Length: 274
Image (cartoon, rainbow, N blue to C red; front, side):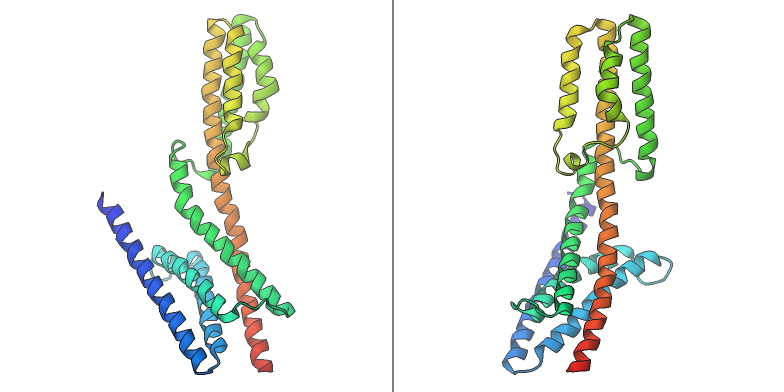
């Protein structure tokens, strides 16, 4: 095991241990407050509000990298483990009761969406890079359309070459009917996210079946097109996973700031009618 992997494993164990200890202390503290008939909801509420504010501050840190506020990786680790602690304090604060008031229902709903999207983002951050590494070299998201166009142009030129060299339109007809729509844009988005490759295998199986009707020259050309089809499918895979990560940010970040605003309103209302 290399040093970077060892360092990551040790850091992960240390962070998990620290988070577990804080969670245990939080539960014990809450039990102690409840036993003394203190206003434990005010304590858990302020702790939860502070956690939400710190979680929202991570987005500000990302947008202001020039400020001397610590490393981005450190903030990310803090964001992750504070997020899990936040879920615990939310449960302690709300309890098992179902919210009834409009503000309470809205606050609980938005918090649930923020927490759920945060957990989803955590899972994606741990799985997507490894999945992408298994499907070819890393491709910059902004360059994917250019590479897609290059693959399409190459496939079209091969289909035209088959007509010019053999006088047969079999490959050209198949390209027009089945492959041009495939090369023309991103395809099988949901399948790539869910690791379903049926569409890819179907096209490759069709081309293998088509080889029975071709001569040697046409077969060689069709196999080149098949390689381009594999490359295009890999490109679509990268597009699907990278765009999923980008779209996640446009959901999680606005919801986080909406939650922060609702928390501030909740605090004002609580103290106004306390």
